Image (cartoon, rainbow, N blue to C red; front, side, top):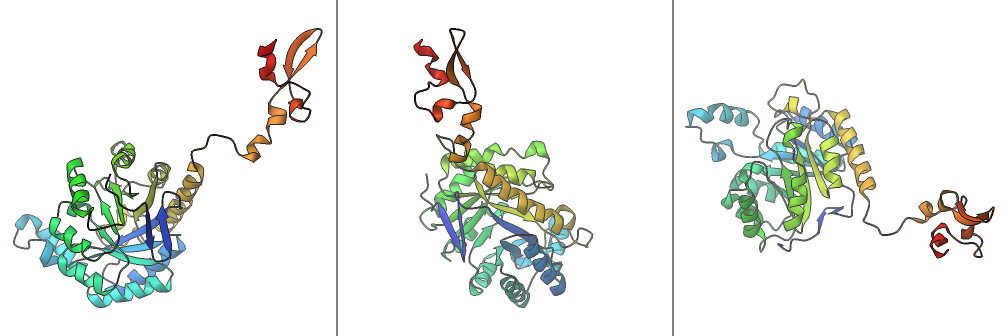
Length: 317
């Protein structure tokens, strides 16, 4: 075990095994580098029932090699959607006005510093950077909670990152993730969340790239308490991630279903509730004698008349 806190506090939100799931709308690049689209997307996320909106922060030249021919298409995409400080601040203010938590995934050290200057309440580490020791160390210096995503990572890479951070960070959510977009149902392997729980003592989460709400709801039943889904204002907008993202109606359904899953999961218990006990009178039996023979019949009159015997007492005769 790593001794990370079992509870994370993000502004006015408490995240733990015993609290309802914390839902993140991953806006990512779906702002299209357009202030109006970005602000409308944040407002739509609020109406969909999320707790937070997440963006991506980067200086393209600092994390993609523009001289690499194979990476040129990737460089061009990210450069098109690179947010400057002004847009960060506007989106942060918009989220605050909507009552949402604003945070982001930094992809380079300069962006860690930018987000620190904005005083974001937490940092998200992208799956691809779970092996980026420099970035992990820079983020750890902020003393802010970390959501650490694990897509495409080997188990030793996950534990290695946890070992690096264990003495530097107190609040960390380990987020299971499958880096396939969308993730086929046979590739989800949600039992991995239980595996994480066997060696990780902090808060668990699930960055869900599958379609619909079912995987997220199941993840909550396995004690994932942070759920992240890609979110778009409109799947028909131009951009690399809109088609794989949830629209407002779909995100609203996720919000409703993960809360129901949380309520259904409940707690481990060794005795029934008082409400359930109330059904015993008509559901159980008492012993009685008919034609000289001992027989058990409903209702369980022994519950009201202590002189009567319950059905289990048949063994005494």
